[in-house]
Length: 207
Image 1: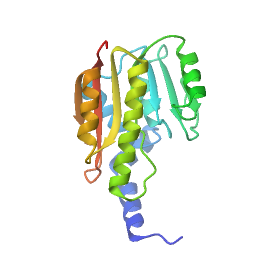
Image 2: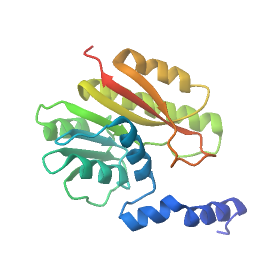
Image 3: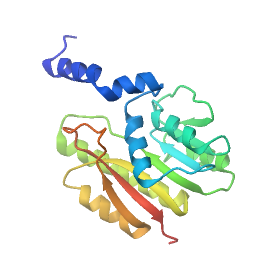
Image 4: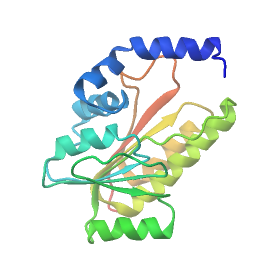
């Protein structure tokens, strides 16, 4: 298939991207690692020995960051529909986190412990229709929020990638009853032209 001008421009931008080059140098699987690192440096997300669930984990850069920060005594459980190459100290489950079978597997791995942090870098398959794509992204955000409300311990955190659009403010408002603070974050490592924005549910309330 012949490349379009848009795809050629993207490839040129991607290969010259300083974060892409840094990821290759540091051994991260994608530039997305630096978004999580930047958010952690500002909000101190990670602590040693944490229990973390990474939703939509493939290709694995967020799991790489998380397991590096929490140390050998912590645990990262990564979940994705797509296959993910193994990462040392990360327990991977391939499947839909809404499925009862996958939920049971997550619960077995947790061994009755509650989770300190849920991170989600999930994004829908892009159709190219902005309103459809944004609506699909918000739906994934809502699923991740519902999951977090069930699995997070009091004072645990929830970090999710979202996208600006007509439903975004409603999603942020839907997070507020469950957390002490809800913070909108646009990392410097997120491309300026991208509508992506991250939502941090800081310190889950004991509801």
